[in-house]
Amino acid sequence: MRRFGLGSPRDHLAVEFLRVAFFLIPLLLLFAGVISPREFIAVFAGYFFLRWFERYLKPRILAATGPVAFKRRKASPLTIQLDPQGLRSESNFGSLVLGWADVPPPRVFQNGVLIRVYEEQSLAIDADFLPGGMTPVALAEKIRRWQEVVSE
Image (cartoon, rainbow, N blue to C red; front, side, top):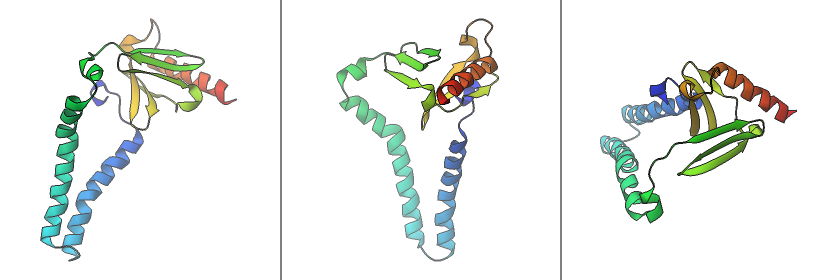
């Protein structure tokens, strides 16, 4: 999302702050004499192993052992439909149906609109794919009006 100019949610900043704190806390404990240098090294060795496992090994294991139908799927276009009832999204990877009461207000960017659908998942709607004459600001305002009607 960042490469399209669509920033990430604010709570992502909190996660990044905690990631930095994770590096500082063992260092402070080492200087305070609470942990030994060996324990300090073990903390980071474990952390980097888990990061490597999650990023490189786990996807390969899941791809090798996952259902055959999942392995054979090819990427397909994502279809997003917005109407007064809510949001619908479909692709060959799955479908999503949410009412406006379940969706936080959209975030507007120059390049499009970002709609958060799960804790760590958002739909990015690029301004180039909006219907003729529709701007990201106009789309976000329309969604907000739909959300207000639902909340009444």
